[in-house]
Amino acid sequence: MSPPRGGAEAEGDRHRPRFHLTAPAGWINDPVGALRRAGRYHLFYQHNPHGTQWARPHWGHVDSRDLVHWRYLPEALAPDADGADADGCFSGSGVVTEEGAALLYTGVRGAVGPGQWQATCLATSTDPGLRDWAKAAGNPVTPPPRGLRLTGFRDPFVWWVEDGWHQLVGSGIVGRGGALLHFRSPDLRHWEDLGAALVGEGEHVAGEWAGRMWECPSLLQGPDGALALVSVHDGDMTTHHTIGIVGDFDGATLRPERARRLDLGPDWYAPCVLDDDGRWLVWGWSQEARGPAGPARAGWSGTLTPARVLTLADGWPRLDPLPELARLRQRRLPVDGSSVESSWRAATAGDALDIELTLTGGGEAAALRLLASPDGEEATTVTIDRAAGRLELDRRRSSRAEDVTADVVTAPLVATEGPLAVRVLVDRSIVEVFAGAQPLTARVYPVRADSQGLEVTASPATRASLVVHTMGGATPPA
Ligand code: FRU
Image 1: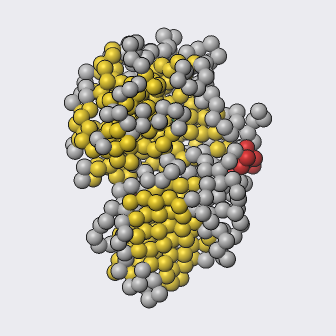
Image 2: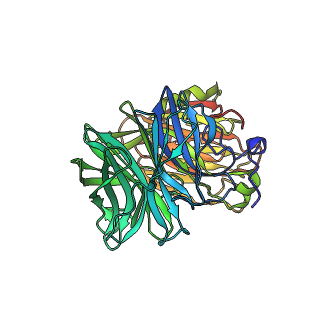
Image 3: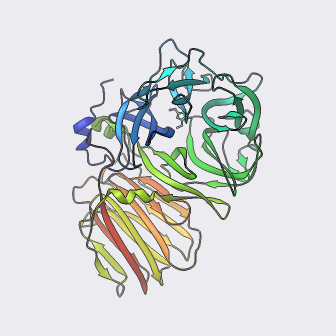
Protein backbone atom coordinates (compact mmCIF):
# COMPACT_ATOMS: atom_id res chain seq x y z
CA MET A 1 0.00 0.00 0.00
CA SER A 2 1.44 3.40 -0.89
CA PRO A 3 1.69 5.85 2.01
CA PRO A 4 -0.99 8.52 2.18
CA ARG A 5 0.06 11.88 0.88
CA GLY A 6 -1.51 14.10 3.49
CA GLY A 7 0.30 17.37 4.13
CA ALA A 8 -0.08 20.14 1.61
CA GLU A 9 -2.10 18.05 -0.81
CA ALA A 10 -4.63 17.04 1.79
CA GLU A 11 -4.88 20.70 2.86
CA GLY A 12 -5.93 21.69 -0.67
CA ASP A 13 -8.64 19.01 -0.65
CA ARG A 14 -12.02 20.70 -0.50
CA HIS A 15 -13.54 17.97 1.66
CA ARG A 16 -10.91 18.10 4.36
CA PRO A 17 -12.54 19.80 7.38
CA ARG A 18 -10.93 22.97 8.76
CA PHE A 19 -12.03 23.17 12.37
CA HIS A 20 -12.67 19.46 12.82
CA LEU A 21 -9.48 17.49 13.40
CA THR A 22 -8.24 15.03 10.81
CA ALA A 23 -5.06 12.97 10.97
CA PRO A 24 -2.03 14.77 9.50
CA ALA A 25 -2.17 11.90 7.01
CA GLY A 26 -3.90 8.55 6.94
CA TRP A 27 -6.90 7.01 8.65
CA ILE A 28 -8.42 8.23 11.93
CA ASN A 29 -11.06 6.62 14.12
CA ASP A 30 -11.85 6.93 17.83
CA PRO A 31 -10.65 9.93 19.83
CA VAL A 32 -9.06 8.45 22.97
CA GLY A 33 -7.18 9.23 26.16
CA ALA A 34 -8.14 12.91 26.61
CA LEU A 35 -6.39 14.45 29.59
CA ARG A 36 -5.28 17.84 30.87
CA ARG A 37 -1.80 18.42 32.20
CA ALA A 38 0.51 21.41 32.69
CA GLY A 39 -1.91 23.86 31.09
CA ARG A 40 -2.51 21.78 27.98
CA TYR A 41 -5.21 19.48 26.74
CA HIS A 42 -3.90 16.27 25.23
CA LEU A 43 -6.01 14.23 22.87
CA PHE A 44 -5.07 10.97 21.16
CA TYR A 45 -6.76 9.11 18.33
CA GLN A 46 -6.83 5.74 16.66
CA HIS A 47 -4.57 6.23 13.67
CA ASN A 48 -3.26 4.34 10.69
CA PRO A 49 -0.37 6.52 9.52
CA HIS A 50 0.32 4.17 6.61
CA GLY A 51 -2.95 4.27 4.72
CA THR A 52 -6.49 5.59 4.44
CA GLN A 53 -8.19 2.36 5.53
CA TRP A 54 -8.46 1.06 9.09
CA ALA A 55 -5.43 -1.14 9.94
CA ARG A 56 -3.18 -1.93 12.92
CA PRO A 57 -4.04 1.16 14.98
CA HIS A 58 -1.43 3.50 16.48
CA TRP A 59 -2.23 6.31 18.92
CA GLY A 60 -1.87 9.68 17.19
CA HIS A 61 -1.44 12.69 19.50
CA VAL A 62 -2.42 16.38 19.45
CA ASP A 63 -2.36 19.03 22.13
CA SER A 64 -3.96 22.41 22.70
CA ARG A 65 -4.09 25.24 25.18
CA ASP A 66 -7.60 26.36 24.32
CA LEU A 67 -9.47 23.29 22.96
CA VAL A 68 -9.85 24.81 19.49
CA HIS A 69 -6.31 25.29 18.16
CA TRP A 70 -4.36 22.03 18.06
CA ARG A 71 -0.90 20.97 17.08
CA TYR A 72 0.22 17.58 15.87
CA LEU A 73 2.71 15.72 18.07
CA PRO A 74 4.67 12.54 17.39
CA GLU A 75 2.75 9.28 17.48
CA ALA A 76 2.32 8.24 21.15
CA LEU A 77 1.94 4.48 20.68
CA ALA A 78 2.71 2.06 17.87
CA PRO A 79 2.24 -1.72 17.86
CA ASP A 80 5.33 -3.82 18.64
CA ALA A 81 5.73 -6.85 16.41
CA ASP A 82 6.66 -9.06 19.38
CA GLY A 83 4.51 -7.33 22.00
CA ALA A 84 1.07 -7.83 23.54
CA ASP A 85 -0.09 -5.20 21.02
CA ALA A 86 1.46 -6.84 17.92
CA ASP A 87 -1.69 -6.33 15.86
CA GLY A 88 -2.78 -2.96 17.17
CA CYS A 89 -2.99 -0.46 19.99
CA PHE A 90 -6.77 -0.24 20.24
CA SER A 91 -8.75 2.37 22.17
CA GLY A 92 -8.49 3.19 25.86
CA SER A 93 -8.02 6.14 28.16
CA GLY A 94 -5.50 8.54 29.63
CA VAL A 95 -5.02 9.60 33.22
CA VAL A 96 -2.78 12.06 35.04
CA THR A 97 -0.56 10.43 37.68
CA GLU A 98 1.90 11.73 40.27
CA GLU A 99 4.81 10.91 37.95
CA GLY A 100 3.23 12.27 34.76
CA ALA A 101 0.53 10.48 32.82
CA ALA A 102 -0.53 6.98 31.87
CA LEU A 103 -2.35 5.50 28.90
CA LEU A 104 -4.40 2.35 29.37
CA TYR A 105 -5.09 0.85 25.97
CA THR A 106 -6.11 -2.42 24.41
CA GLY A 107 -3.30 -4.54 23.01
CA VAL A 108 -4.56 -6.99 20.42
CA ARG A 109 -3.09 -10.07 18.78
CA GLY A 110 -4.52 -11.99 15.90
CA ALA A 111 -6.90 -11.08 13.11
CA VAL A 112 -10.00 -8.96 13.75
CA GLY A 113 -12.94 -11.17 14.69
CA PRO A 114 -14.29 -13.24 17.55
CA GLY A 115 -10.98 -15.10 18.11
CA GLN A 116 -8.84 -11.98 18.46
CA TRP A 117 -6.99 -11.76 21.77
CA GLN A 118 -7.59 -8.42 23.53
CA ALA A 119 -6.15 -7.22 26.86
CA THR A 120 -5.45 -3.95 28.66
CA CYS A 121 -1.89 -2.64 28.39
CA LEU A 122 -0.18 0.27 30.14
CA ALA A 123 2.19 2.98 28.89
CA THR A 124 3.55 5.85 30.98
CA SER A 125 5.21 9.18 30.37
CA THR A 126 7.18 11.40 32.70
CA ASP A 127 8.26 14.09 30.27
CA PRO A 128 6.45 17.41 30.70
CA GLY A 129 5.21 17.51 27.09
CA LEU A 130 4.08 13.85 27.16
CA ARG A 131 5.94 13.13 23.95
CA ASP A 132 7.74 9.96 25.09
CA TRP A 133 5.78 6.94 26.21
CA ALA A 134 7.22 3.77 27.72
CA LYS A 135 5.19 0.58 27.60
CA ALA A 136 5.10 -1.36 30.90
CA ALA A 137 7.35 -4.43 31.02
CA GLY A 138 4.49 -6.41 32.54
CA ASN A 139 2.04 -5.89 29.68
CA PRO A 140 -0.72 -6.84 29.43
CA VAL A 141 -1.81 -5.61 32.87
CA THR A 142 -5.39 -6.87 32.58
CA PRO A 143 -6.06 -10.02 30.58
CA PRO A 144 -9.68 -11.01 29.98
CA PRO A 145 -11.23 -12.87 32.94
CA ARG A 146 -11.45 -16.64 32.53
CA GLY A 147 -14.66 -18.56 32.53
CA LEU A 148 -16.79 -16.00 30.70
CA ARG A 149 -17.72 -16.23 27.03
CA LEU A 150 -17.06 -12.67 25.93
CA THR A 151 -17.90 -10.92 22.66
CA GLY A 152 -14.83 -8.69 23.16
CA PHE A 153 -12.66 -7.15 25.87
CA ARG A 154 -11.49 -3.69 24.94
CA ASP A 155 -11.35 0.08 25.37
CA PRO A 156 -10.60 0.46 29.11
CA PHE A 157 -11.99 3.53 30.86
CA VAL A 158 -9.96 4.42 33.94
CA TRP A 159 -10.63 6.83 36.80
CA TRP A 160 -9.43 7.46 40.33
CA VAL A 161 -11.43 7.38 43.56
CA GLU A 162 -10.27 7.17 47.16
CA ASP A 163 -9.95 3.39 47.19
CA GLY A 164 -7.78 3.24 44.06
CA TRP A 165 -7.88 3.21 40.29
CA HIS A 166 -10.97 1.79 38.65
CA GLN A 167 -11.21 0.33 35.16
CA LEU A 168 -14.29 -0.47 33.10
CA VAL A 169 -13.72 -2.58 30.02
CA GLY A 170 -16.18 -2.70 27.11
CA SER A 171 -17.47 -6.20 26.57
CA GLY A 172 -20.46 -8.46 26.09
CA ILE A 173 -21.35 -11.83 27.58
CA VAL A 174 -22.56 -14.35 25.01
CA GLY A 175 -26.27 -15.02 25.51
CA ARG A 176 -26.66 -12.25 28.08
CA GLY A 177 -25.88 -8.88 26.50
CA GLY A 178 -23.39 -6.02 26.35
CA ALA A 179 -21.28 -5.71 29.49
CA LEU A 180 -19.04 -3.37 31.43
CA LEU A 181 -16.39 -5.37 33.31
CA HIS A 182 -14.99 -3.71 36.39
CA PHE A 183 -11.47 -3.89 37.91
CA ARG A 184 -9.59 -2.04 40.66
CA SER A 185 -5.88 -1.35 41.21
CA PRO A 186 -3.60 0.47 43.65
CA ASP A 187 -0.98 1.23 40.96
CA LEU A 188 -2.43 0.80 37.43
CA ARG A 189 -0.36 -2.40 37.09
CA HIS A 190 -2.07 -4.96 39.30
CA TRP A 191 -5.80 -5.24 38.78
CA GLU A 192 -8.38 -7.05 40.87
CA ASP A 193 -11.47 -8.38 39.08
CA LEU A 194 -14.61 -6.86 40.62
CA GLY A 195 -17.06 -8.57 38.23
CA ALA A 196 -19.52 -6.87 35.91
CA ALA A 197 -20.70 -3.35 36.72
CA LEU A 198 -23.53 -3.72 34.21
CA VAL A 199 -24.84 -6.38 31.83
CA GLY A 200 -27.51 -5.69 29.20
CA GLU A 201 -30.84 -7.48 29.13
CA GLY A 202 -30.37 -9.37 25.88
CA GLU A 203 -29.95 -6.69 23.25
CA HIS A 204 -31.45 -3.94 25.40
CA VAL A 205 -30.65 -1.79 28.38
CA ALA A 206 -33.36 0.21 30.15
CA GLY A 207 -35.60 -0.42 27.16
CA GLU A 208 -33.15 0.96 24.58
CA TRP A 209 -31.60 -1.27 21.90
CA ALA A 210 -27.98 -1.88 22.90
CA GLY A 211 -26.58 -4.68 20.70
CA ARG A 212 -24.30 -7.45 21.98
CA MET A 213 -20.95 -5.73 22.39
CA TRP A 214 -20.26 -2.37 24.06
CA GLU A 215 -17.26 -0.44 22.79
CA CYS A 216 -15.53 2.63 24.19
CA PRO A 217 -17.30 2.87 27.55
CA SER A 218 -17.04 5.81 29.91
CA LEU A 219 -18.64 6.56 33.24
CA LEU A 220 -19.34 10.02 34.63
CA GLN A 221 -20.71 10.76 38.04
CA GLY A 222 -22.42 13.99 38.91
CA PRO A 223 -24.81 15.36 41.47
CA ASP A 224 -27.79 14.17 39.41
CA GLY A 225 -26.64 10.59 39.02
CA ALA A 226 -24.28 8.53 36.93
CA LEU A 227 -24.06 8.48 33.18
CA ALA A 228 -22.39 5.67 31.25
CA LEU A 229 -21.68 6.06 27.54
CA VAL A 230 -21.31 2.96 25.39
CA SER A 231 -20.95 2.60 21.65
CA VAL A 232 -23.10 -0.18 20.37
CA HIS A 233 -21.61 -2.92 18.25
CA ASP A 234 -23.80 -5.80 17.19
CA GLY A 235 -21.05 -8.34 17.78
CA ASP A 236 -20.86 -9.10 14.05
CA MET A 237 -18.40 -6.38 13.11
CA THR A 238 -20.95 -3.59 12.62
CA THR A 239 -20.74 -0.35 14.53
CA HIS A 240 -24.03 1.42 15.23
CA HIS A 241 -24.29 4.47 17.50
CA THR A 242 -23.59 5.67 21.03
CA ILE A 243 -26.08 5.52 23.87
CA GLY A 244 -26.07 7.24 27.25
CA ILE A 245 -27.27 5.12 30.18
CA VAL A 246 -28.46 7.14 33.17
CA GLY A 247 -28.68 5.47 36.55
CA ASP A 248 -27.26 5.00 39.97
CA PHE A 249 -23.66 3.84 40.49
CA ASP A 250 -22.87 2.62 44.00
CA GLY A 251 -19.14 2.21 43.38
CA ALA A 252 -19.50 -1.36 42.11
CA THR A 253 -22.69 -1.70 40.09
CA LEU A 254 -24.61 0.62 37.78
CA ARG A 255 -28.40 0.36 38.12
CA PRO A 256 -29.76 1.65 34.81
CA GLU A 257 -32.85 3.84 34.87
CA ARG A 258 -33.11 5.14 31.31
CA ALA A 259 -31.08 5.20 28.15
CA ARG A 260 -31.11 6.92 24.77
CA ARG A 261 -28.92 7.89 21.87
CA LEU A 262 -26.48 10.73 22.32
CA ASP A 263 -26.34 11.89 18.70
CA LEU A 264 -29.13 11.18 16.25
CA GLY A 265 -27.03 11.17 13.09
CA PRO A 266 -25.47 8.25 11.25
CA ASP A 267 -21.88 9.51 11.46
CA TRP A 268 -20.91 9.90 15.12
CA TYR A 269 -19.41 7.13 17.23
CA ALA A 270 -16.92 6.06 19.91
CA PRO A 271 -16.80 9.24 22.01
CA CYS A 272 -14.08 10.02 24.49
CA VAL A 273 -14.81 12.10 27.61
CA LEU A 274 -12.80 14.44 29.80
CA ASP A 275 -13.86 15.83 33.15
CA ASP A 276 -12.56 19.38 32.69
CA ASP A 277 -12.83 20.62 36.29
CA GLY A 278 -16.43 19.52 36.51
CA ARG A 279 -17.35 20.35 32.92
CA TRP A 280 -17.78 17.19 30.87
CA LEU A 281 -16.23 17.40 27.41
CA VAL A 282 -16.90 14.83 24.71
CA TRP A 283 -15.13 14.25 21.38
CA GLY A 284 -16.49 11.82 18.80
CA TRP A 285 -15.40 10.15 15.58
CA SER A 286 -17.21 10.94 12.35
CA GLN A 287 -16.44 8.29 9.76
CA GLU A 288 -16.60 8.80 6.01
CA ALA A 289 -19.89 8.31 4.18
CA ARG A 290 -18.22 7.76 0.81
CA GLY A 291 -16.30 4.98 -0.90
CA PRO A 292 -12.56 4.42 -0.41
CA ALA A 293 -11.40 6.17 -3.63
CA GLY A 294 -11.84 9.75 -2.34
CA PRO A 295 -9.85 9.18 0.88
CA ALA A 296 -7.15 7.27 -1.01
CA ARG A 297 -6.76 10.21 -3.40
CA ALA A 298 -6.83 12.83 -0.66
CA GLY A 299 -4.58 11.00 1.81
CA TRP A 300 -6.85 11.20 4.87
CA SER A 301 -10.00 9.49 6.14
CA GLY A 302 -12.32 10.31 9.04
CA THR A 303 -12.59 13.36 11.28
CA LEU A 304 -13.22 14.16 14.96
CA THR A 305 -15.97 16.45 16.18
CA PRO A 306 -14.71 19.32 18.36
CA ALA A 307 -15.40 18.84 22.05
CA ARG A 308 -19.07 19.10 22.98
CA VAL A 309 -20.32 19.93 26.46
CA LEU A 310 -22.22 17.05 28.03
CA THR A 311 -24.75 17.62 30.79
CA LEU A 312 -27.60 15.78 32.43
CA ALA A 313 -30.66 17.92 31.77
CA ASP A 314 -33.94 16.78 33.34
CA GLY A 315 -32.36 13.38 33.84
CA TRP A 316 -31.31 12.93 30.20
CA PRO A 317 -27.91 13.40 28.55
CA ARG A 318 -27.61 16.58 26.51
CA LEU A 319 -24.83 17.72 24.17
CA ASP A 320 -24.14 21.37 23.33
CA PRO A 321 -21.44 23.02 21.22
CA LEU A 322 -18.28 24.08 22.97
CA PRO A 323 -18.43 27.82 23.85
CA GLU A 324 -14.73 28.20 22.90
CA LEU A 325 -15.58 27.43 19.25
CA ALA A 326 -16.49 31.12 18.95
CA ARG A 327 -12.73 31.82 18.99
CA LEU A 328 -12.43 30.29 15.55
CA ARG A 329 -14.94 32.71 14.03
CA GLN A 330 -13.37 34.88 11.36
CA ARG A 331 -15.97 37.07 9.71
CA ARG A 332 -19.65 37.75 10.31
CA LEU A 333 -21.49 37.45 7.00
CA PRO A 334 -24.16 39.88 5.85
CA VAL A 335 -27.50 38.15 5.51
CA ASP A 336 -30.35 39.34 3.24
CA GLY A 337 -33.96 38.70 4.02
CA SER A 338 -36.91 39.63 6.09
CA SER A 339 -39.49 38.31 8.46
CA VAL A 340 -42.20 39.40 6.02
CA GLU A 341 -41.24 36.68 3.60
CA SER A 342 -39.81 34.46 6.32
CA SER A 343 -36.73 33.90 4.20
CA TRP A 344 -33.08 34.78 4.68
CA ARG A 345 -30.09 34.25 2.46
CA ALA A 346 -26.31 34.52 2.34
CA ALA A 347 -25.51 34.00 -1.34
CA THR A 348 -21.92 32.81 -1.06
CA ALA A 349 -21.62 31.91 2.55
CA GLY A 350 -18.74 29.44 2.31
CA ASP A 351 -18.10 25.90 3.41
CA ALA A 352 -16.75 26.36 6.95
CA LEU A 353 -19.52 28.09 8.90
CA ASP A 354 -20.96 28.55 12.35
CA ILE A 355 -24.69 29.27 11.94
CA GLU A 356 -26.92 30.47 14.77
CA LEU A 357 -30.62 30.55 13.99
CA THR A 358 -33.18 31.58 16.57
CA LEU A 359 -36.83 31.07 15.69
CA THR A 360 -39.48 33.15 17.39
CA GLY A 361 -42.96 34.34 16.46
CA GLY A 362 -44.62 31.51 14.47
CA GLY A 363 -41.39 29.58 14.43
CA GLU A 364 -42.79 26.10 14.18
CA ALA A 365 -40.87 25.04 11.07
CA ALA A 366 -37.75 26.10 9.22
CA ALA A 367 -35.52 24.72 6.52
CA LEU A 368 -31.85 25.50 6.03
CA ARG A 369 -30.27 24.82 2.67
CA LEU A 370 -26.54 24.46 3.13
CA LEU A 371 -23.62 24.03 0.78
CA ALA A 372 -26.05 24.92 -2.01
CA SER A 373 -25.05 25.62 -5.61
CA PRO A 374 -26.83 28.68 -7.13
CA ASP A 375 -28.98 26.50 -9.41
CA GLY A 376 -29.82 24.06 -6.61
CA GLU A 377 -28.15 21.07 -8.25
CA GLU A 378 -26.28 20.46 -5.02
CA ALA A 379 -27.69 21.30 -1.57
CA THR A 380 -28.05 19.71 1.84
CA THR A 381 -31.36 20.51 3.51
CA VAL A 382 -31.94 20.54 7.25
CA THR A 383 -35.61 20.72 8.26
CA ILE A 384 -36.76 21.56 11.75
CA ASP A 385 -40.45 20.83 12.23
CA ARG A 386 -41.53 21.54 15.76
CA ALA A 387 -45.21 20.88 15.12
CA ALA A 388 -44.44 17.38 13.82
CA GLY A 389 -41.62 16.86 16.35
CA ARG A 390 -39.19 16.02 13.55
CA LEU A 391 -35.64 16.90 12.59
CA GLU A 392 -34.48 15.90 9.16
CA LEU A 393 -31.26 16.06 7.17
CA ASP A 394 -31.69 15.41 3.48
CA ARG A 395 -28.49 14.48 1.68
CA ARG A 396 -30.07 13.08 -1.48
CA ARG A 397 -28.75 16.09 -3.40
CA SER A 398 -25.74 16.96 -1.27
CA SER A 399 -23.33 15.79 -3.91
CA ARG A 400 -23.12 15.12 -7.62
CA ALA A 401 -20.62 12.35 -6.83
CA GLU A 402 -21.90 8.80 -7.00
CA ASP A 403 -20.05 6.87 -4.33
CA VAL A 404 -21.45 8.87 -1.41
CA THR A 405 -24.37 8.10 0.90
CA ALA A 406 -27.43 9.97 -0.42
CA ASP A 407 -30.30 9.49 2.01
CA VAL A 408 -32.72 11.29 4.32
CA VAL A 409 -31.88 11.10 8.01
CA THR A 410 -34.94 11.59 10.21
CA ALA A 411 -34.90 12.00 13.97
CA PRO A 412 -37.33 13.01 16.69
CA LEU A 413 -37.27 16.63 17.81
CA VAL A 414 -38.38 17.02 21.39
CA ALA A 415 -41.09 19.69 21.47
CA THR A 416 -40.26 22.90 23.33
CA GLU A 417 -42.21 26.09 23.94
CA GLY A 418 -40.93 29.56 23.07
CA PRO A 419 -37.90 30.52 21.00
CA LEU A 420 -35.88 27.72 19.51
CA ALA A 421 -32.13 28.14 19.25
CA VAL A 422 -30.60 26.11 16.46
CA ARG A 423 -26.89 25.88 15.84
CA VAL A 424 -25.41 24.35 12.73
CA LEU A 425 -21.70 23.76 12.24
CA VAL A 426 -20.75 23.22 8.62
CA ASP A 427 -17.22 22.17 7.83
CA ARG A 428 -16.65 21.19 4.20
CA SER A 429 -17.70 17.53 4.47
CA ILE A 430 -19.38 17.44 7.88
CA VAL A 431 -22.58 18.99 9.24
CA GLU A 432 -23.47 19.04 12.94
CA VAL A 433 -26.99 20.18 13.79
CA PHE A 434 -27.85 21.16 17.37
CA ALA A 435 -31.61 21.63 17.88
CA GLY A 436 -32.45 20.35 21.32
CA ALA A 437 -30.59 17.90 23.52
CA GLN A 438 -29.42 15.47 20.86
CA PRO A 439 -27.31 16.72 17.96
CA LEU A 440 -27.37 15.15 14.52
CA THR A 441 -24.05 14.60 12.74
CA ALA A 442 -23.66 13.58 9.11
CA ARG A 443 -21.08 13.71 6.33
CA VAL A 444 -21.76 15.31 2.92
CA TYR A 445 -19.49 15.83 -0.11
CA PRO A 446 -20.48 18.64 -2.48
CA VAL A 447 -18.20 18.64 -5.51
CA ARG A 448 -19.12 21.88 -7.26
CA ALA A 449 -16.87 24.82 -6.43
CA ASP A 450 -19.93 27.08 -6.15
CA SER A 451 -21.79 24.89 -3.62
CA GLN A 452 -21.34 27.56 -0.96
CA GLY A 453 -24.81 29.09 -0.56
CA LEU A 454 -26.96 29.27 2.54
CA GLU A 455 -30.70 29.91 2.60
CA VAL A 456 -33.19 29.76 5.44
CA THR A 457 -36.96 29.62 4.99
CA ALA A 458 -39.37 29.50 7.86
CA SER A 459 -43.08 29.05 8.30
CA PRO A 460 -45.12 32.29 7.82
CA ALA A 461 -44.95 34.97 10.51
CA THR A 462 -41.81 33.50 11.94
CA ARG A 463 -39.25 35.93 13.13
CA ALA A 464 -35.73 34.69 12.93
CA SER A 465 -32.38 35.94 13.88
CA LEU A 466 -29.71 34.45 11.70
CA VAL A 467 -26.06 35.03 12.54
CA VAL A 468 -23.47 33.40 10.32
CA HIS A 469 -19.72 33.37 10.82
CA THR A 470 -17.01 31.90 8.67
CA MET A 471 -14.64 29.66 10.59
CA GLY A 472 -10.87 29.32 10.70
CA GLY A 473 -8.81 26.16 11.03
CA ALA A 474 -8.08 24.03 14.09
CA THR A 475 -4.53 23.12 13.10
CA PRO A 476 -1.70 24.95 11.40
CA PRO A 477 -1.34 23.61 7.83
CA ALA A 478 0.36 20.21 8.09
C1 FRU B 1 -14.46 1.55 17.97
C2 FRU B 1 -13.39 0.49 17.94
C3 FRU B 1 -12.91 0.13 19.33
C4 FRU B 1 -11.54 -0.38 19.08
C5 FRU B 1 -11.07 0.55 18.01
C6 FRU B 1 -10.06 -0.05 17.08
O1 FRU B 1 -14.57 2.27 16.78
O2 FRU B 1 -13.87 -0.66 17.26
O3 FRU B 1 -13.73 -0.82 20.01
O4 FRU B 1 -10.73 -0.32 20.21
O5 FRU B 1 -12.21 0.94 17.28
O6 FRU B 1 -9.52 0.93 16.23
